[in-house]
Length: 365
Image 1 (cartoon, rainbow, N blue to C red):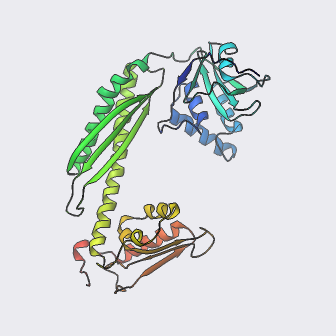
Image 2: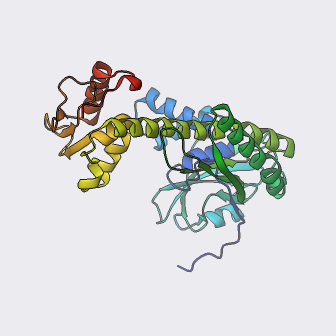
């Protein structure tokens, strides 16, 4: 079969603020078809999944019900298995309606959903060469019209989003009396999504004798039907919220690092960190990163074998805390459990039992 010449216009649009282009096509397409926020659609799908008792939200029994609940029509199976998405948009789609098209890379196989609106293919990647298997119809008579907002995104990014992120970052730093030698915020546009990358450098403190470099990214998708005023209001609000979230995460990392450095200063001079003397694979790294900062410099041994199968599937050994009466030269405390959470609960109990204020620590050496 000769490949159909792609003629339908591709409008690259991703409603997902995390920037993913695969795995959530159902949420992205439904969001655009009904002019509904991505987060709202995600919640509707999740609630419907639990209500109907299905194991996933991206199966037709679930998303089909959500589509009809929102006012969409019933599912139509497409008989011609050789029609491509762009051909459907050009020759089968009525411009007065919006279509949620199911399609796949092989005839008769469904693996993707794409929204067709105004005879254009709206997707985060070029799915015009996928084979149509069926579709849902949404009445577009009351739908908001697509605006020229895309042409204004560069100005909005530079004059609003970038400024909000920088101001909120600085305010967070000043409120916590951090010393910051550099804040750099850069913005760029990816189709209908505004993105910023923020880099900052924190100076040494009383406990942390080195500079720390942090970087975080924020992505805010703009709905194609937004006016300039709506887009500015949306960007300003979301930039504040997401900057605060990222800075809070940095604050937690700072607490963890300071706690770790304090314990390191109180630990035996002869001790070394677990990572210094042991190979750390991906599984061990993930587990170690999930542990609280105070325990990091005390770890001397870690073994993970078939989680959930044995009483010692997780085995962790640490130097005792300075306040632990069992503390002595070369003494070790061992924690074992079936799951990672067993170790974490035991560590919490241990710290709660033997913790004393830092200024009360009297190193035994």
